[in-house]
Image (cartoon, rainbow, N blue to C red):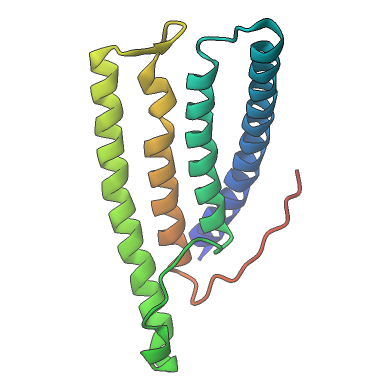
Length: 167
């Protein structure tokens, strides 16, 4: 029980870190896109790599946002059969679903890590001499975190915990 409590504490710390990263990345995105717009309209030129970086930042914010949605149990879920399940079985079905999702996310994390390794070996460059694999590290991180959270929340019967952003 102490281990589970420690994992929930770690999860809350991770959530705060992810929130701060999203704020920084979103601020960078807004500043960069506004600068790109001004540069194009006023000087008829822009940073060549600006749009590429913006696309990567969208990916990062989207995946970190998905992690936070799972943390707060506000992720998209398909709830087609819940009305047909008896009330006394719902907790077991929710637990099973969370464990299955954690296992699938674990496989996706492994596949994403293999993908990042492949990109690292191919030495592809995205822009300004920065390798592609650095920007793709969000993929295995996200799937590992998703797997961790679903596995952790399978220990609860219902995860309706709502969190405040105390940054």
